[in-house]
Image (cartoon, rainbow, N blue to C red):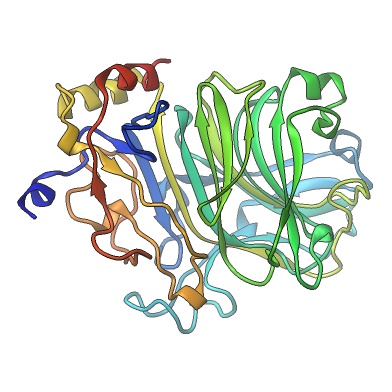
Length: 357
């Protein structure tokens, strides 16, 4: 117990054990518990709602796309210490990204937000969310550098039925650009069946990005690896929810307002920013195997059925040393027996490869 009490993640975070050949350490962290985030200033917790229009010609659909900041709405639980009960504005608690049903102006109004930080280079990225219950929208969780370096998990509500769903796993690449930005004609695209309805409950969707591959997971279960066209540049993390009436993709648009709801976002990553790298070196001048924290896998759906069990380093005192943006003042529940955090040994040679930029 004394060893656990003195280890506070100064040397980073890892998704896997040191006895694995591709062991990597991530230096930076961003966590948001949107069930307990009581602010309208999302930039203060690391996110910026976006505002822009895309014409129907550029959107390649029957309608243009219109992203408005007011379509990104916080709706936390009224009781700051509870994990159930009424939300502040009624309906599903969490961060809501709305697609509007009125598209009489030729545009479908949707929602998008991006991380304030643009220095995310390799890492493990996770979101817990419940998708739209109206057919005709696309909800996405993705990392973006440009149109040929992008990692996507995209959900088409038209692909959900009475018992199952699907997620579209995508790496945008030079090949997809040559196909008119249609990745479905490339090797970096897969429609992954899901044995549940994504619009009926919250589940964790995750991708781990390493120099040699991108791995996708749902509720901690591995789905797929992509090893070609792996991005190499730093970029942003995004969430969006939209429709343009394209029958080959988003379908719709919906005839009524519909939301995609996010309960948390977690990102553990390396930074391309020189100042952040210096901060890491200052708090971890010499790699200490007792000061790397293993990131717990979310092995159950983080929903009301599991009592919202999940783990945040940000609520574990002292476990986010030197971080510039992380969640504060929230709660934490972890779905595991024993201690939620494991402190693991590490390999110095592999750390240098993981931090390479």
